[in-house]
Amino acid sequence: MNFNISKKALKGYFMKPQHFSVNDGEGIRTLIFLAGCPFRCIWCSNPESQIELCNNSQVYSEFIKEYNINEIVDEVIKYKTFYKYSGGGVTFSGGEPTLQLEILKSLSDIFYDKAIDMAIETCGYFDFIKVEAVLDKMSTIFVDIKHMDSSKHIKLTSKDNKLILDNIKKMGEKDLPLIIRIPLIESINSDKENIINTVEFMKSYINNPKLEFLPHHFYAEKKYEQLGIKAASKNLKAPSSIYISELKKLAMSYGIDVVKY
View (tube, rainbow, N blue to C red):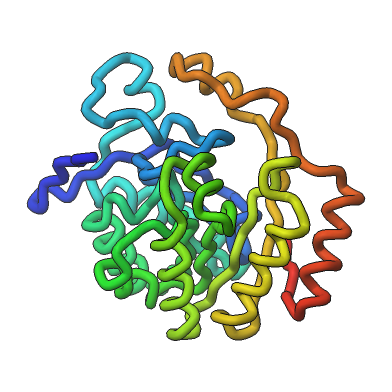
C-alpha cells in the first residue's frame, strides 16, 4: 500500500485518536491509530484500517483523516499532565503502525525528546532493521501471536507467521519489553495445543515472558455495515470465562507471567 507521505510535509493517515485509554499500556494513555494493515484478519475490530487510502469516498473520509505531524503532537501534548501523574503516555496502534514508518519514526523521536512514555501495538509483520530504532524507544511492545501454525495463520490473516516469530526472537535477544497477546477465538486458536505451542515458543526466546489473553468481541459490526465490507461470521466468539481461566493456569504452569491491561 502506497501512502505517498511527503517528507517535507510529514503528513500521514490516521483514524480518530482515543484519549484516556487504560487498557493499552501503563497509566492513562492516548491511542494514536495509524491507518493501513498488511493483514486481513477474519475478526478484525478496526476494519476501517483496511481501506485503500487512495479512496476519496465519503465513507473513507469519515474514518481516515490526513494529519500533519504537528497536529498529532498538539493533540497529544494537551493531555501531558494526565500522563505525568498516572504514569501513562502514548500508544501507537492501528491498523499496523509500522506501515507508515516515516511518520512513526518522526513522532517517536518528538515524544521521546518530550519525555512522553510510548508503547506500540503491532502485528509484528515488519522489517526489523528498519523498525529497530523505534522499538528501542518503547516502554512496552505488544505483539500478537494469532496462531502458531503457519498454514492456519495464513487462512486467518492472509499472511504467514514466520516473519512475526523471527521478529519476536530478535526482540527477545535484545530483551525488549515485550508482551505477547493472543486474541482468543473459540474453535479458532483457543485450543490447548496452540496455547502450549505459543508459551513454549515464548519460554524459548523471551526472558521473563509475559502474556495477555484478549477474548474476542464484535464491537465493530456497525463499522462493517458503514464500510460495505463483509463482516466476519457472527458465530465467532470468545471462549467461556471458565475455559479462559484454565488457559491462564496452563500458561502460568509453564512459567509465563499472565497479565491484563
